[in-house]
Amino acid sequence: MTVQSYLDDAVAAMTPSAEDRTVASAHRTAIQDAVVSGMDAFRIFETGSWSHGTALRVWSDVDYFASMRHVRPSQSYDDILQLKNVLADKLRWSARSVTIDRPGVRIEWPSGPPTEVMPAHITGDDDYWIPDPKGTGWVKSSPLKHNEYVNSTRDLIPRTKDFVRLVKLWKYRSGAPITSLYLELRAAKYLREHQPFAMMLDLTGFFSWLNEIELAGLNDPSRFDGRRITAAGDSLLPLARLYSERAASRADQARSAYLASDYLGAQLHLQQLISP
Image (cartoon, rainbow, N blue to C red; front, side, top):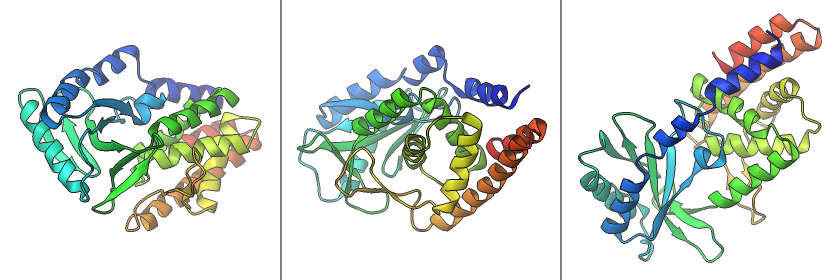
């Protein structure tokens, strides 16, 4: 097996099938009916990795924004609590559990991936206010623009989404406390700035670079209003940097072996990187 075929196999194993997609969306109608009738919401719509085409089998939750019709309360917890109570009541016969997990509500099912639902209030510029994960108020989010950014990167580099999946595979298997959104946007931005594309060299180069910048926050690349996207909360950032440092060390070893034509050694180091 070549290094490239190893990476290709890793991507294929984690890419959801059509059946996985059907299972992931199986509860959408029930959730929408509950939120529309129980909170007078406009609708729900899918965000995150399943909508971006970067979801991982087994690992990725299904994310929805619930677009609210009522005036946004000053305390986001008011919306979260009401959403949790409505979903717990309406889904009591189908869901295994419904719990608050800021910035939204987490639903566990008897089978299939968990679902995360967040209350969201549209702004005048097609962004949404969603609960602040680190506070009691609200922060802006641009899920549609993030999707457009990743898709436009894919238009430049066709294997962008495969690359993002490998980066996320490292996150989930290592347990690194870094947000998927941060990694996805960092990965897309890295590929835009490091052309031409070579999967092995770019993957190892990305982890080395991520460590060099110490997981610095980035300006939201889908906008130009100074908004910052952080890798982790303040309390978890030191731990996240330790994971990044370890990944960079393994990436450097894999890259060195590959450039020395030690392809078996490169593959072994890659396995330690993305399947620790």
